[in-house]
Image 1 (spheres, rainbow, N blue to C red):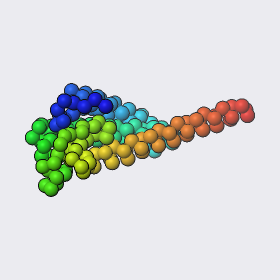
Image 2 (cartoon, rainbow, N blue to C red):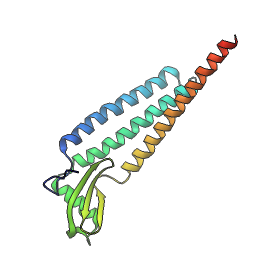
Image 3 (cartoon, rainbow, N blue to C red):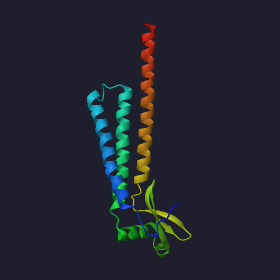
Length: 164
């Protein structure tokens, strides 16, 4: 792993900007697809595969939007903000022992390393990572069920045509 020359360097602002821009585009695209599919087929008239597909798309959009919101928090942290966030995360007893930052993108956080005591998460609200994980898991499960349900329906139609 290549370390920056400055142990107190935060996230790359260009990387955060790219995450924010791509995150907005991806979240908007998934949301538009989900709502358009829902509107086109109707909530009550659509079959199970369609319902699962648009729900998976909306859950994926929400996961990307929440991750992007976390990146916005990091983008808004300047040097003073990073210092304050780290001091709050480690507590007053360890604040003087912070020896550097460990910025990560997955999971999205600013790690505040304390000599002999490990790394504390800061800079991103605590709800971001668990929310992203839950929404991404829901989106994945719904997408898998949608694929299986579509396959089951196709097999059923093929068997029905073969019997005719």
